[in-house]
Length: 168
Image 1 (tube, one colour):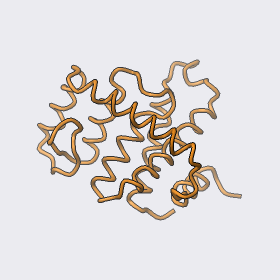
Image 2 (cartoon, rainbow, N blue to C red):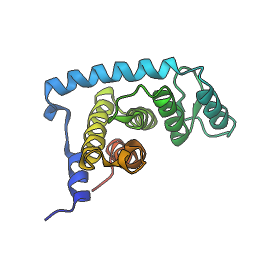
Image 3 (cartoon, rainbow, N blue to C red):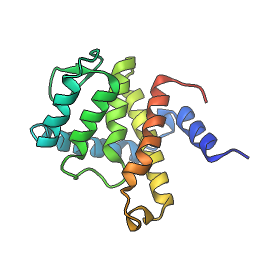
């Protein structure tokens, strides 16, 4: 019997765009529009400016774009900044988390992925983050934790792994 990690890895690496139901593709596009709207609304927010200062003053190699600008930094720094934009007003969806979209777009940019490959990775990441969060049945908040902080790193790893085309 496969472990949960093996099942998640298999799902992540084997899901293709053609397997995603049409209604999921459509709903995902609505979530993306909302995600980008929230991110752009936070461009001038204090927290965003603070993160931006840190990541741009780091002198990193320009690989990924900081949204709303022409500035580029390393992948991890761009993921941090862009996810901070998404989550800044706390209007992002409860489960899907900004880290999935930020990771997919930043890693996708770094590896030269197509839009379809990036969207496929986003759908994978959303599925992973939602299923992991739902497995706790709302108990993360009951014990003082924010579910996104606990499960988002697993989803981000799946998203990045899919786009980097890692092996199982």
